[in-house]
Image (cartoon, rainbow, N blue to C red; front, side):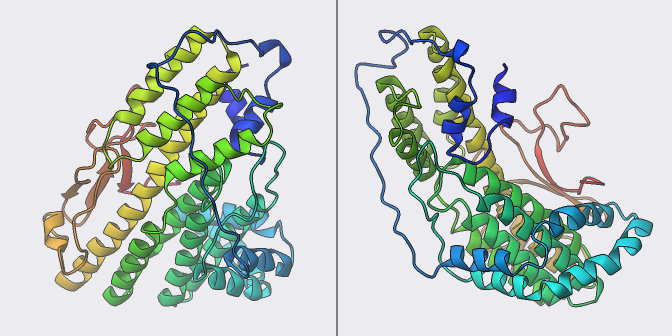
Length: 404
């Protein structure tokens, strides 16, 4: 069974716990304990305490789900309609518009609770362990799809202030879900942010949106980016979940040492390469040790950190896109460089999460390109992976991929 297949089998318990549970017993091998160490030091993961919040955003989101007329409806209807809108498939859009409007009107109470949650504190409500399940995560994705559909509807109806508010509520949900949680919550939050980003781009690129709304949207995204839960804390919570069920998981001294080092490496400025170097070293060390369980666990950590960086980049880029569009609306042309946005539209130029340097921006006629370098930290000219599959693609934000 390949690592990628194992990764896809995660189903809601603590991420690494689910991964080990998916391993066939034939793969369980006792590691060679005397090899694969970095040095003589044996590091320990320091536990972190996450306070239990009473009457929090989590409660607002659960009340939203309870108020839904048909909890699965956004999954069944909104996702396909959103794709049709983005692809400008007008026949499909018009055919589904009445159903979307009916769904949104019947779920106004749900959307009110989603908005309420966006303005409240959030912490994951459980202490993770190998048996913990997170049934609300699928419901949170449904809430996000409902919010996105409602945003598109508001935009079609000409209420851009409401459209952007709906989108910001979905962004807030994506930022909130990982707070205080484990790796699976980080993955779900990342998926929700990707939904919000597509909807934001669709509305922001409409030439009729007032510059004041675009600038307010950018400020809100900046606020939400400042609330992103630090990835080192997510790793520490994941380790706590593994420690809670040591009989079900390979809680070895080597794994704890490596987790502690990953936490230290992740707690470095954007652009630092220590985490990537450690991940590459760890992959080789796990192979030398001969433990399939250890070898399968470690790549998941690197994969989720990539998603964390992508999420940070999405919020940074979407803030920038709103500012670029506001500049275009007010001045009749796109800025020649990102410096032109400072300080009127944003306090500083956007940072590429992979390199710690500026994102790449090019004004091109009546359009522009904006991208980050992606995990390989190499500027490939804004190429996408589906166009050049032999490359590790850049993280391209604009131009928007048709049908994405």
